[in-house]
Length: 597
Image 1 (tube, rainbow, N blue to C red):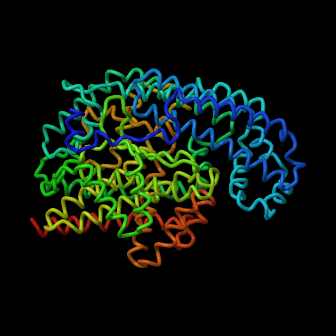
Image 2 (image 1 turned 135 degrees about the vertical axis):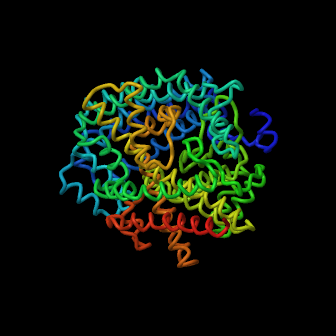
Image 3 (image 1 turned 180 degrees about the horizontal axis):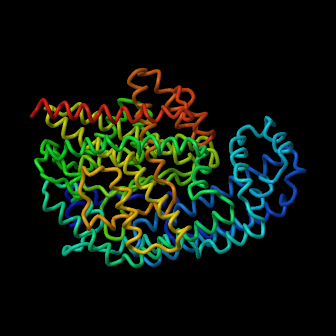
C-alpha cells in the first residue's frame, strides 16, 4: 500500500538530505562537535561561573555569544538525531543514537546552568544596568526573558541533579510512546496510523466506520502501555511544578510563551463560549449529507461536491508555490528551496512518525519539513502549513540562535497564514457554488480542528492534570471519561460520540511532548484570521509589516511584535473578532446550502 501510493504520487524519492548536517550517525564530525562542545562548556564554566555580578558589559556580551555558539552546535546535534529517528522510529540504532545525544546534552547543560541561575538571581538594579548597555541591546529581550523564571529556579545543586537524571525521565517515556505507536499496525491490511486516519476523510461511510474501528482496535492493544506512560508524564510534571512552585499545571507554558495568564484565560473562555458555532455547523452538515445521525467518524466526511481529485507531488508543489508567490515572491523563493535542496521528507513509509512538522534546526543550517503525503487537497494545505513554518524559521534565522526561537503562540502565524493563502487560491479556481461549498466546508472543519478542538483538548489536559494531582493515577476509563466530557461539550449533541471514540485521546502526542501546547494552535488560528482580514483591507501595505514580523522571530514578546498591526492581545474582544470571522464562514455556508438546495 505504501509503495503503491508513493509511486502513484511520485513521492518515493522526496526524502530529505540530512547530509547537510551530518553524513550519518557514524560521521566523525559528530564526535568532533561533541568533543568541542564538552571542552567549550568546561571553559565557559571555569571562566565565568560565580562572576556574573562583577563582569563588565563587554565580558557579559562575550559570555552570551559563547553560550549561543555552544547552543547552536548542540542544537545541530539534537536536530540531526531527532530527524534521523523520525523516519526510522523502529530502528534500534537510530533510537540509541538519539538517546546518546540527549544524555550528552544533559552533561553539557550541567556545566552551563550556572548562567541561568546567576543571571536570574542578580539584584534588579545590577540587571537593569546591564540591560541598558548599548553593547547588549541585541540580546536585551533574551536576557530580560531569562529573568522571568527567577521565582521558579532551584539551587545549582538541585538544577544540576534534575539535568543529570533527565535522560531517564520524561523524555525516555515519550520516546517509548513514539516507538509503540510507530510500530503498531492497524486492521487486516496492517496499515500505518497515517493511512487509517486518512480514511476518516473518505466519502464512503463504511470506509470511515471501518477506519474508526481499526484505529480503536489498534490503540486498545497498546492502551496499557500508553496509559502508564501518560500517568508517568503527568506525575513527572506534577513533581517538577511542585518543586518550582508553579501555581498551575499550565503556568510554565504560559511563562514560556511570554503570555499573561489573563490573556490565555480570555482565549479559552472566548472559544468555549462559542461552541454553538460548532453545533450549528454539524447540524448543517448532517442535513447536507442526508444522515439521521452524525457520528464521530462522520465529522470529516467530505460533502458530495468536494473535488476528490488525487493531487500528485508536483501538482502540490505548484499549487503551494503559486499561492505563496501571489502574496510574496520572497516567500515563494524560500519555499522553493525546500523542494529543490532536499529539505522535505514526504513519502508514507513504515517506521516514520505520523503527522507533519517543520524543525528549525539552527540558523547556520536550515529547517527541514516532514509530511506524510497521501495526495488529498487537505495534504496540500498541510504542506503549505509546514512550509509556512519553514519560511518563518528561515527569515527569523537572521536574528541568531537565541533570538530566532519563536514562542509557540507566534510560531503558528506563518504556517496558518500560508495555509490560508493556498485555500483561497484553490477556492477561487473552483467553478460551481456546490464545489465551493464542499471545499469551504472542509476549510471550516480544519479551522474547527485548530480552534475549537484544540481548546477542547486543552480542557481535557486541564482535567487530567488536576485529576492526577488531586486523586492520583488515572485509569483508562478515567482518561476516557474526561475525554468524552470535554469533547461532548464542544459538539453540544450535534455529533454522536461512539464507544470507539472514547480512547482516541491515547494517540495524541502533544499531551506528552509539550504539555499545555495545544492552545497555541487556537491562538495562532484566531490571530491569523485577524491578520488575513487586515491584509484584505490594506493589501501591499500589509506585506512589509508581515515579513518584518516573521523576521523578528522571538526577539520580543507577542504583545510588542503585533503592535504594528493594531492588535492588542490584552483586549479580550480581540478573540471575539476572530471567532466572528468563523461565525461568518458558517453563516455563508448555511446561506449557500439554502440557495443550492
